[in-house]
Length: 502
Image (cartoon, rainbow, N blue to C red; front, side):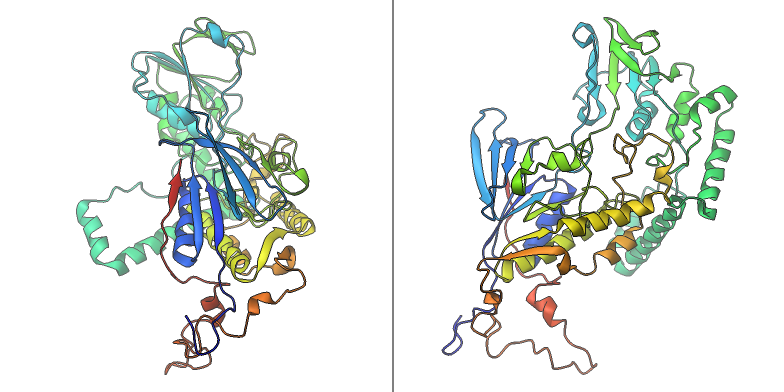
């Protein structure tokens, strides 16, 4: 649009190409925020699951402020190369499940599956089932299979807490209640707020040696005393570490299953498979028809290579031998224009949705400046990331996760690397501002740092609808000028289609 003799060129959003890997909750959230709060975006989302396309194969950062992403079709093996300005890693931290490499697997006559990849049509009824693991998945699996299996054996190496629900009820809403919520937004908002406060209050138990921490332990110990009549079984199930050291699992159905005559608990590790079942490390053999591996995931092992600046691999940073560093649960030093959901030190306790929403909001604010300030790339300074991680690690000794338990919150050296050491509200507060001093900003023209200022005319033109220095009759501004420019924007600007390329 031309306004008199001068066409606006100041702070104009350039075309930005964004590739998102993963169409789960995180991918959906960033897609929603990009399409509702930004414009002039070329957005492509790739996912490995169902559809006519395929899966990702390899990602490399060539050093030219853009990402080259190579996708390979699972069936045809045809490769597609996509170039993008921004790469968003939204595959989730619990994506790469672990199926143990059993000795003798080829000779086992039964079926083997993982809880993360349950076969369609798998028949359990009447079978002898071995469940490996007593984490969240293992407990839920045992609790459900107790009603179908003829015999059920749960193999686990150590105890874990399986306690009552942290809230009063697992409520099922009637159609009348749903309709009332739909017709009365204030009532629904009040209920949501009450529920969120109840969830937030549970964070108290995460701090060690506090009244809430001790009260929680007393509560679950009383629950075990009340629910488990056999003292030997109670000894086998009740751990010594803090209840919140491992991810909390509602264990009513698991505790019930452990006391059924056809369900058995074996505190030993499965070393190999035999023709008819499993053999443990102690040499005992157990016959079974189905082996269910509830053995968890490799939280930070990427299923495909992601190569950053100077040849740095994401797996080198996050893998078993890496230092598991990230910045503000959204970025990684050495990977310009790269953003990630649920990297090390991220808000995972309670509901993960608020943390995902906040991470997406934080990413959008950085992307908006990348788009409107004539920047080629944005990356975190290594020293800023190190200082952030130093703070996070300084808090871990005060948290329940640091107790001596085996948990996917920890790496193989026992260092707590997964959770954000604070409440969800704390993560919101920590990301309220973008600490631009922590970033390496590279401009399209290094000699023209203020090129985005353009010719002195913004796209609002000479007679803008919004006048920032004119107050409303109530004495307030109609919004914030910086927000309207997009740097801390929450505005809905325009809807763009999301391209789901598979």
